[in-house]
Length: 266
Image 1 (tube, rainbow, N blue to C red):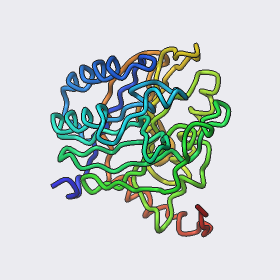
Image 2 (image 1 turned 180 degrees about the vertical axis):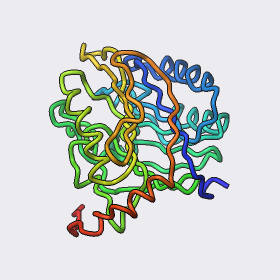
Image 3 (image 1 turned 90 degrees about the vertical axis):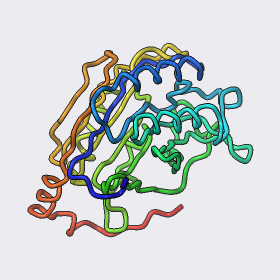
């Protein structure tokens, strides 16, 4: 059963280049990369806007929730019997969203709309910001998926009594000039929330000639790296997370009990 507690969670990160504004080519390459995963996995991470790259040309490339990419995700999740997640451009009610899809093997799914839109790229002029936080439960693990620029805003990620989770995810198109922030903020989120953190970033060059070095990582609840991908290299890796060690650490060092209470307004 999918939500029966598993003592471990196998998370596969696919650090990849992206074909600029080409849904067909990106689906083709990720089909091959996913099929090439030989080991058992529970969760497969794809980058932010994995089907197009980080483009503001939403009117030309947006899809419906029953469109090509979502249907492809459903097919691949069934084939691998794993959750597949990543974000893409969705049009809904004549509005555009940078939307993360959480696709389960049985074809059911949830979604999260990116909360913090990247003002430096004027993302807020094209896309509508999300208002809701969602905890996904898979194999008994509570997982909180976020998108790229959300990483800079710790309040949105804060683990608390009504937002408890075990694993915090970020899928991203995080460019090379600010990669030091990426490398510092991922372990910071793990430490302050006493959780595992997985951050998946793309590599290569986009249609605006911005460079991406990847440096995807999985961090444990103490802030130590379980994996850190080599810069500028395409790579697929599966990392195994252990639930008991997380729970024992939280029990032994229960500083979350002393945290401030707060409320996020819509």
